[in-house]
Image (cartoon, rainbow over all chains, first blue to last red; front, side, top):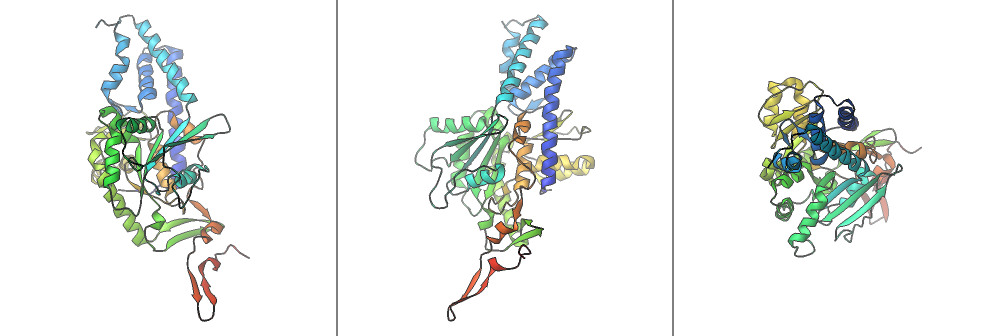
Length: 77
Length: 336
């Protein structure tokens, strides 16, 4: 299954990764600007990604517990 | 614990957190850490990958202590290199020393672990890896998912000739079949030694084309990225590809993310392949900063003039006191 990636593959990967980063950041800015129903979800998702790393679906690279700890004070006095 | 019920307060606080993080992210340097015992060619590798000019010395070790080098970019951004010698190389180390290593690695965008390709001993590096990973499950996942293990100085592995594939005044080095096979075998051996024991701590991520929709154990995705928890073996990646052939390239990248990669800074061998894996492991926002310090084009390219210096056979006739053959003088199409 192993593949050796070329310089052309690398150039495409960098461009795509940069585009994804910019999209996540734009999502945050749009969420703030529009204040629609989904913006809390978008904000939390962006915050988690920026603070902890990649978040995909229900798990992320550092584990759910640490994220809960970080946000727990938002929901308590 | 009483829940905060006013949604506006919650939103304001989340918004502040995000705004602060975006600010921090934008101002952050791009940080690269390289670990490895003396003589594994850490500085040379960084020079080859990022075009820096870190000091190298073929005789005396340049890096006995942790060193941090700052490289300033033209637009005010900067790059930090943490050059980390092998743990315990300079004597006994205590837990606070290990914690310093861990902190540096956790704050890094790229973490490379260099092992000399000619090495067959894994115990020293395995012990160092166990100590650096520590006991915190979250930190173990963060570190293992970011680490890339390298077999450096592949050009010194065997005396077998290397192929210089020339096009005009430049070319690229490739291994002869026997060397390529040996390198692949070594990569598997070191993967079994360093990555397999920590498979549960791995998360591999990669981009997709926006159409990924596979719901299988260990896989998760959003509109841009796919992640896999655990080590995606070659067999498992093949099985997924057979069931979902449209996403074969995604499974391939998820598998390739945690390969051990052999390379040579001197021959610029396999550097684009290594950089591809590094890019797949960049955290959020890091790709924008990464782009400022790298030039993917020409990463594997060596000029004919440089390649000529690697020609290494001279036949000297003692009786006649005369050089009969000098490989460096051979016609490579770059001289008139």
